[in-house]
Structures are given as C-alpha cells and as structure tokens.
Length: 116
Length: 114
Image (cartoon, rainbow over all chains, first blue to last red; front, side, top):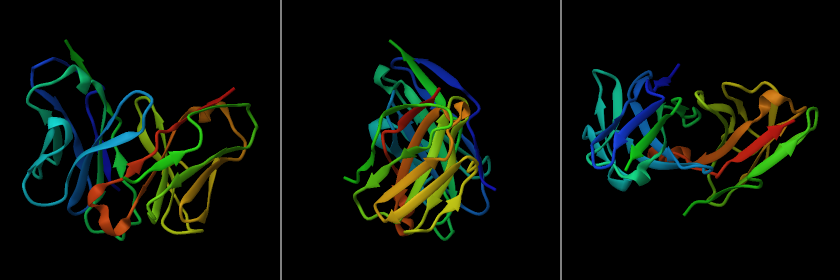
C-alpha cells in the first residue's frame, strides 16, 4: 500500500527567508509525486509534479521540489517566502505504472505561515 | 481550463437525513473521485469511479454510496447522515491515460450534520 508522511503540522518562516516543507513517501515501484496547495475555503490547486527525469522539479509561484529516491523524499522548497504563500500544502503519491485505477494518496498536510 | 463544480459550498443537515453531494466536470474526464478532508488527517478517499456506472471503494466508504449515471456527474450519497460525517468534501477528476497532470479539484462542500 502507498503512503505519504508530512512530519510537520505547521512551518513558520519569515518573509524573504527560504522555506522547506517536508514529504516522505512509500510506494511500490517508481512514484508519481505531486504537491498541491489549498487556500482558505478553496479546493486544492496543482503546484508541481515529478514523473521521471531531473530530480529538481520547478512549479508554479516560484516553488520547486527535490526528489530523492534513496531517502524516498520529495521536499517542497522556495528560495524566498512571501506572505501570500501562507496556505495548506499537501504532498501526494501514486505508483508510476498502474492501470489508472488507483487514486492518489495524500499526506496529512502542512500549514505554512509566513510572517511579514 | 477544466472545471469541476460542486453544487453547494455549505450545507447543514440533520442527523438521519439522506444527503446528496453533486459534482460535475466539463472536460470528459473518465476518472472521478470523492475525498473528505479533516484537520490533521489530510484527504482520505471515500469512493472513485473510472467509468459510467463503475465505482470502487476507497479507504473510508462506510456510511457512503455513490452514483455515476453520466460521465460528467459523480454524486456522493450519505444514506443516513451522522455527526461524524461533518467534514469538507472534495470532488476531483482526471484522465487516466494522462496522469502527468494530477487531479482537478472542485472548491469543496463543507457539510455540517447537527
């Protein structure tokens, strides 16, 4: 069975500082990995994905994520945080080779709070 | 852009009522999903459907059923609502043959059962 762990319920960072939101995963075979963001009272919005290739993936709003196969991690990063980045972030995983009939498994979410 | 529309943003229902949550997508996606979101638990899969009239149980199907009579519409049914079903419900869809783009989510329905 696949699983995702987001070890931090909340991450606090000052505006302008770099941020990291952690994610580790467990899945059979090679993974599809995703990050989504949720703003208050909204659905989830796609940020970025890893399928194959370069371990550093760039996404929306200046975010990037680093895939580390040996550590089974997919941490979300941004060089300089903005107050508007404050939101709830979810990591998700799905096996790479399946029939398309298995749904994404999500982590518990990490609330990012950027202080001015 | 693909749109996934959930018919209600907020619902308040009484214990024991039968509740219907509706979801419609406009891009001919084959897969549709219902998740519930609770603080500290993230998103948990209730049911999903990969074709009309087809459905598969997710991780927490108890107390729920689904209906997919048309490709664009996926309904979640709470047969007899209970207070522990108070939650945010999120619908999503995708194309299985193009899973590079993840899911498209609706804005969610916040259900309160009193």
